[in-house]
Structure formats: structure tokens, C-alpha cells
Length: 261
Image (tube, rainbow, N blue to C red; front, side, top):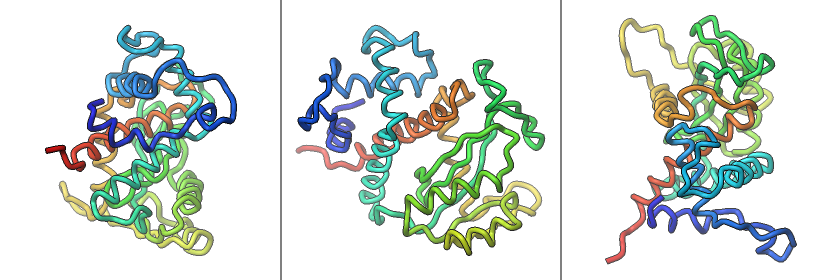
């Protein structure tokens, strides 16, 4: 990352326990080098063991990735960055509206049968990414399941998580796959208004709000690690999506910061 990116995100990093006097072993490598290695892996789609020698050893980078994944630190760091990006664009840190959708992607051979399935609609054997984004296209929540999981079933769990994490969230746009009892459930149980955006037009039509989440998926496919699901665990697949968005948001923050004279 550039010096401008590091200056923007450095203060937002979680502080290790040993730096707060809570004990623990000091880290052998600086956070900037570790973050650069993870960003390189996500952006270029390499294997962990193919980490270039310019970065710390691959096992140390993976240990950092695993620790942040298992303790929710990547999600916490992502949330801080999202708040900074929204503030820089003149928005409140917490959104009031979002868009939900799903994306089916092929899974690599390392993905076990317990977390993979066949999406008959998209004819994809692999996994499905269920996401909620705000009106800026920034990620609010993600859940990775087998590709044969229904959108409404996954949305019920994902929207419950999103509503619990973002208390100002009141309106969600969705496509026709989210109709039925989910609309009533969102209103009665989650205090969310689920609005279905019709897609019955003929030919190509830019649908209101739906293009926001489609642009989000397009960004994911530009990071090569996410062009196919290579992760053994769904939690790792979700963490990779957070890292992909961290990559995008750090660049946006660096561009929005005033340059020194």
C-alpha cells in the first residue's frame, strides 16, 4: 500500500494486547508488511505457500489472517474503515438503507461436500455469497453458504445479523427472489421494510438500487482470489470478502485525504 493509504488506515488498526500491557508475545513483523502480504494474496489470487520472498513467511501471514478471522478483528477493522469512508463522503457512519442479493460462484476441489451445492438457476456447482450493502455499495454483512441454499432462508439469518449490527437500518431493497413470507418477517421481527424491485422488463434495464449490489459483485470478481471459491471454510471465504472491500476502501480513503503542500 502507498504511504497515503497507510496514513489513513494505520490509526484504525486494532491494538495488540501486548501493547496495552495485557501480556502476550510481541509480533515479529510490522502490521504494514503483514497487511501488504494479505492484500497481495487477495488481489492476485496466489496460493498461501506461493507468497513472494519480499513479504514475511507465508505461515506467519496465514497465522495473522486466521487470528483476525477467528476473533472478528477483520470485521471490526472493516467496520471502522466503512465509517471513515462514509464520513469522508458526507454521510452518517451508520446507514439507514441497504440492498441485499446473492452471487453463486464455482468452488475449487478443496471445498468439501458439506459446504458446497448446485444452484439450479445459475447452473453453478459451488457456493453462494449472500451480501447486504449500503447505498454507497459498501458491505454491511456477508454470509457464505452452499450454492443450493435458498435466498430467502439465508436472507432471514443475514438480515437479522445486519439489523443487530446496524441499529439505524430501516429499509432494504431486494429482487423478486426475496418475496413471500420474508417481507412480513422483516417487518414484524426485525422492523425492516423489505422493498421488492421489479425485474420484469424486457431487455437490459438499469433497475433502481439493484445496480449498487451488482457493482459490488463486479468488484469482488476483480480480486482474483474471489473469482472462484478456494477456501476450505466458509468463514475464510467471508474473511476474503472483507479483505477485498478493505482493499477498495483504503484506496478511496487515500484519494479523499488532503495532500501535503
